[in-house]
Image (tube, rainbow, N blue to C red; front, side, top):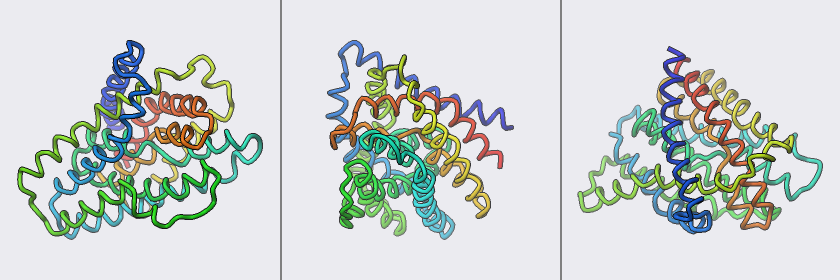
Length: 308
């Protein structure tokens, strides 16, 4: 059963990375460049991903059990990031602060929207997306507060960022529709479905343009790359799986949380590095390195969660 689960998960990861390869080729040919992809990221971030989250709420029928599971998933999303912050705290204290912030951020923040959601949809369907959407909300709340502090060095806390971000706002829109069992008219629901369907291919194509510029030959010369890979892909998901299993979680919810916890470093690592004048090329190399390794580690982690 374990090997079968690995094979299923590996197949889905492989499918996603074939689309990533298309993005790499498109960038090399100049059809869809990294510069264009960066401009398209806002479309993905502010329009497409919220549509995916709202669609996931509309796809699940409300019941006492699903309502409770949603609350548990939200708590799990917070736990993933709190544990991530706790894990990274003892590390990356010495040396260049401008590079250490990239390693800290890349360890805590995973590709919750662009990798976990498509993979959850492929492996678990709408229910998996429904649970992973809660992690996206938690990601955005931490990302626009703690994440900005890490990358910018600005320690001023802005509570408004907890609410005014795409992940939280889309959950605030979708949750009432789910709780009240609202059936939207086709004139609204079908466009949401169409826009949401862009998430997987669009996210993977954009990701491919980033990988196209990664310096593969020198990518692992920095020992800190190995440390981030170890913490992000092995330590964090293993701790999360153990904690959630001890709390009694099983089935789709456990697997969905494992997918979110085992996702590679977020694409936002690159975007935030560029925004706050950090080393964007180092950030691209980090995301590329962790993502390449995740092709192997994510199927294993998913299979372990399905076998528990």
